[in-house]
Length: 366
Image (cartoon, rainbow, N blue to C red; front, side):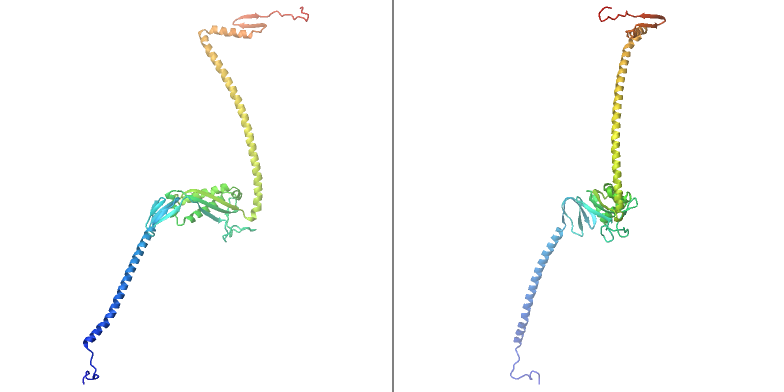
């Protein structure tokens, strides 16, 4: 018996067409759902792409906009490309490719920078010098002076760069750490200046001490890089004496002040003596000049007189000589009583005695 015959009697097999129609209807509903999902996914992806495009445009604008830099006045701006100097920029608005392609470094020129040297000041605990009955060289910061003493020195250097491209490039690129270089130069200058003077001079004559430190700093920096130049450079120092030698230091200061007073008094006396001597010398010099002028005037007058008489002498010397003798005799014999003189070879006697008048008595009769 076949399988068809084993089926339940009275039950007809389903129609093939109906089965096919039901099958088609059951498969169509999932396809419609899949199409809706696909469209929704496509729309979502399309919207996402639009958002991504907008974000990319905004990022690109922001990226390019970050390269716009304003260089402020009083600053020296350097444009770097891949870390290498390309050009300097004037104050104003400038464009550069964003980092890491380009970089604009602005260095303030007009502001004052400060470097502090505390190598002769701070202790091992980075504290100022402490008051203690004994000096501890392995703990306290100090410098050695030229007279073999020790002092505590704190130096402050205030500076501004020279407004040139060479100085700016040297400050920014020539040193791995320019601050450490400047501080090291200042430390060197503090030790050098301390060793050139006594402890008392370092404590009392701060002007000379600061000038020596400044000159040494300039020399050391110039030896390292001559292009690094300063527009202004000022040094300020604070000097302290160790506590255990402070009484001796103060006593020495008192003696120095008394000595200075005496020296000043001696200098004042010297000035007074020199002024008086100069005054007397001027009086003597003036008198000599007056006498000299008078003598010169007299000699010039006599010379002129002789020059005027020379023509008469040259024309007839004997007559001129006789005239001079006669004029001289008249001056000489004006009030003479008895005169004897020799003229040539013939002696002559002039008697010019006048009768002496008798004095009258009070009565009026001789």
